[in-house]
Length: 102
Image (tube, rainbow, N blue to C red; front, side, top):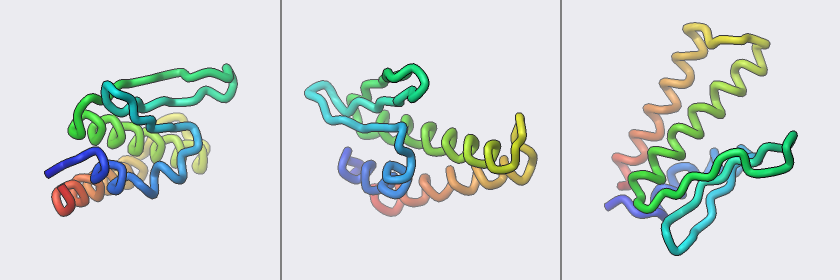
């Protein structure tokens, strides 16, 4: 069964690496918060009342972060085929972890 704890375990490495993202438990579900260092404020806050919604939000965040790293490293404006394959492999890795743990 997928629980919030399982979801956080699945994304444990990503959450440790991405210093702009916070996941905060609230009485209404987990809040996923993205920090904007330039504006010194939260640029996005999403409430995830179910483990499935938390998984989907963190999957989007993790793949978006991977895209950002690839673009920054290779100084590109748009992902090339190799970059898209890396992002897809990461997405599939998280889906496989969900299947194994959830």
